[in-house]
Amino acid sequence: MATADASRVRAPGPAALTSMMFAVTGVAHLLRPRTFDAIVPRILPGPARAWTIGSGVIELVLAGAVWNRDTRGVGGLASAAFLVAVFPANIRTVRLMRGRSARARAIAWARLPVQVPLVILALRAATDPR
Image 1 (cartoon, helix red, strand yellow):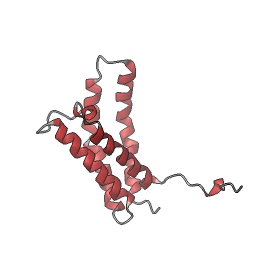
Image 2 (image 1 turned 90 degrees about the horizontal axis):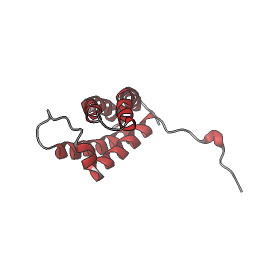
Image 3 (image 1 turned 30 degrees about the vertical axis):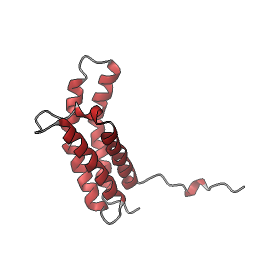
């Protein structure tokens, strides 16, 4: 039986990782919107659910744009901008976790610095040749 040559296996590049991330989070927003409704900043007009569903759809569009080589450049830049735009929701999550378990608070705080490498990943996706 032939075995796969391990030297031929490549890790997914920035575009694939960014695309997969947005596909997963986009589907999560659409399937479990209640999970995300609470973190929509109150300053935004209209119902939180509209923002949750809208951001899920945007994430799926970004996933497709980054996956497609023809739209990858603009998709990667738009993905980075989107990650910066949703940062206030991460800050709101930290506020909402006050009084919750230490684990829940730690996860909320950990999301804040993770946003920086995700923005960098999205920017790298814009120029990923794979």
